[in-house]
Image 1 (tube, rainbow, N blue to C red):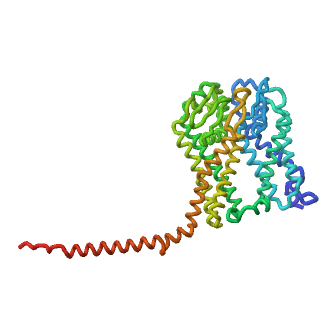
Image 2 (cartoon, rainbow, N blue to C red; image 1 turned 60 degrees about the horizontal axis):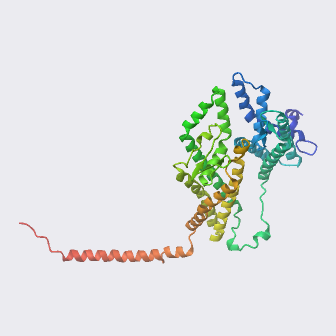
Image 3 (cartoon, one colour; image 1 turned 180 degrees about the horizontal axis):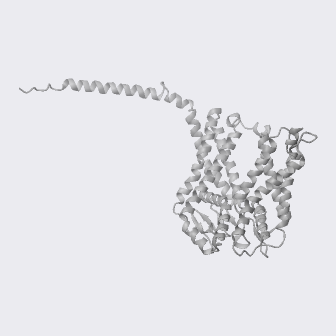
Length: 447
């Protein structure tokens, strides 16, 4: 009895030996409130620090709810004209998806899992989303589209929780037998799906690292322009803090834009504009610190170095696939197909990330921002394939040399033949030196 009283009420097992529906519902509410607090706490702190703020605490809370919805990818409208605002701050998206993914993994780690648990978590999260949409539905600077926003939030929460649940259960997809039966054995990388997936992930992380390097160098070189942009806006410490918060939320977007720049297609900063290594056409842009880093005309002077970074991103996938091919004794054709498949997967992921990093800040000219998905994705696949396919073949050849190379470099092959010739040449030189020494006249002795 004492042990039962010491346990939390929501953790008591139900009649069927499962956690109560209410506990899972509150777990979803907690996850939503945690992600909402990530943006609500800084926004309310800036409102408190702003002297003579025109807005009220309710207005600051409405802004936090709007940014929270925008972090899920939910579209908003701005002003009386209803200008679209669809540029997603990806830092909030990353925090949200990671937290929901971990929630799904915790659900999958239970001894007995029932179908009600994931539904309860999603329902609790959507209850908070419904309250946020209701808060942003009235007149204001940013307005929500209730049905569409709830649908987008539902897709994000179910996808993230489902991915965590899938990962915890250890389910792996398998290709249908009729698809792979037509492929010859020598061209089939047997058991290579996990390796190809890891290689694709490594290539994607490499491209993100390349974008981060380009963005970091650009930010360091453009500190003066950023300082002038911040000083031109004015507003005191609270305004600077708001700009810093906005820039921080958009740093992942800027990294992906820089990665698209390094790949070659570049990105847009408005309709009819492009920022690429080959040149830049940038028109009038809003006075924002991140926009101050854009070149006015022409490309950056160090753009060849930036374009080399995607090639370096293909080295790790090449090593992973090459070592796996050597261990499994894949045919060179199967090795090349595995490397090509990893490059294609990375290209698909790059296209999705390019689509997520872009959006609109207003109507008209500022309705097109960010990389173009159907150019950034193929460019990533081509760059990685240029390094991944020959690199994987070279690593496979280095770990497990072919028979003809072994025969040539073995004792009975080219190496042994070369060794015998060197031995003969060494003996001939020695005999020649001895013969010359014998023919030299004797040295004369003085006195």
